[in-house]
Image 1 (cartoon, one colour):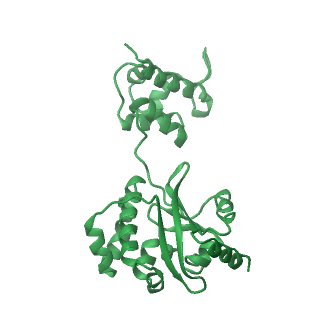
Image 2 (cartoon, rainbow, N blue to C red):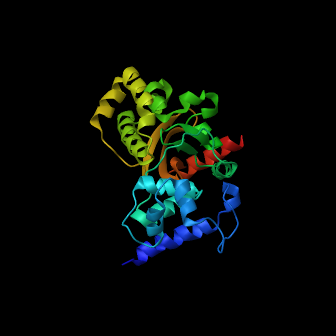
Image 3 (cartoon, rainbow, N blue to C red):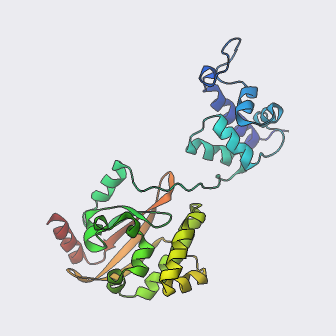
Length: 273
């Protein structure tokens, strides 16, 4: 007997295939009583049994495997959001994340960063490469624009840059937290294999990183505070919050707010200057 959950999956599949143009896929448009692809045409595109696909639309046959769902998603030309919805309907969970490396952000996201005058803000990838920042971040944290792209990695800066290391009030706590949060981010975004080369490099060049990596202490980069020694602002304390970028599990935004309003005013002055 079909359940409401199964019927929801079936209705979704039927709706998606009804929106596709048979002619665009080389199928004949003659003798069609309903719009879109036929069930057997979707099955052909997904390389699965027509009977099995028909059962899915009818709420029969049990839960499909992730591989079958991915084939159907490709056959129906689903977007990433539609594919995720398909998995939620069929399995009650999103699909396994497929990491996509990037070195840019959308203009809209950059404008959001630039609106935060007194708050340093950055966008980082799951492998903790900084791919976007605002002027406050360049002045208070690091002027990423002066660094080669490869050197804009937060772990490389924390463990291999003497200036960054010296600017931390409590470098050891910062380093331990960074490694733990990095582990969590890479796993969540499905980028475990992508971090291999970076980890191998850092283990060879930084005994401190190698020791912390061996601890395997996973942490989440949510909220907290950090203290810096800034050449112009002096000792400062920043509260930070981490935010997910909607639709991009590989990207995260970190916003730092000066705890002292006077420091915030001085940051604004530096940015204006």
